[in-house]
Length: 355
Image 1: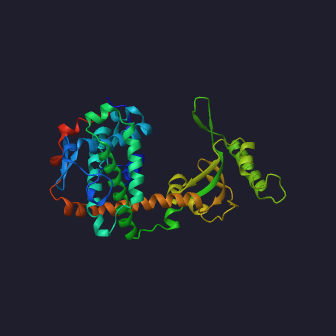
Image 2 (image 1 turned 135 degrees about the vertical axis):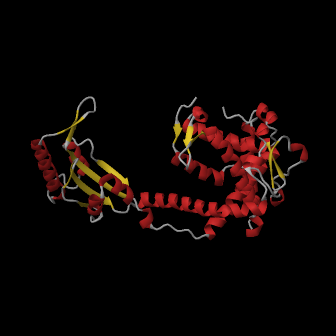
Image 3 (image 1 turned 180 degrees about the horizontal axis):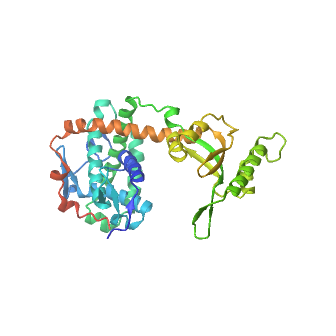
């Protein structure tokens, strides 16, 4: 039963973040003094093998449980019946996509651990201790039934957390060395107020109808009066555009924070050009469109807070694209034989339930 569709953009953000920071099993346990070791009796059922190292059901379950909790908190417990639109435009069941993502991320972290020595990166004793403490909290949340069926030990969970942190450190080193920088111009977010006098009225059923020419003239007169009030140095309402909008009962007037591209898409090229002629704290003249009269107030041509947030988001995206372009060659150096279709034992993997 399909109950909905997951937003791809929101999903991709979660997936990118998860690929860097979520818990996964340690591949090179010798790098982590005190972080535990993989004893043969702990291996249990094997989901797949990577670089001659068995990835057990317990290892995969630690990660799967984290993802399950995260997705259900975001999308609801019925998320596994939903679909997600893929890059090629097709749709796929959320559980099917997530199962592959889990294995892909494990492989990713295994590779990062395998190349960590090339960059002289290892965890400090303090980092290992901190990860072990986090692992103990996670382990103690699991039930006896989960521990038994999924073949999970405390030592295994500690290795999971240690490997994940090392992978994060290596990833940070790789993308930092790439020197990726996003300018304020690329990340620009503009915050402005649109005081809008509409050419349409709305009835109780939300149906729109165009107002008469006489009413349009009245709207223009109001817009002109509002402009004079806003720019007047002696008016008590000078500069208080939100208060004036409320006075004129302009329900579609509000502040917006948009990128230049979004402004063009929303308002068109002409208004885009008009807006970017304004300075911070200034007002536009009255601008007529087919929908009504607009009076714009430019709060921030480049909103510092919103631009900084977008710059961070764009930087993360650019770093992930860089990493994705390099990863296949790194993976081949670690295990050239691995493939999801051929290497993963689905009969064992299916012992992990998402519903």
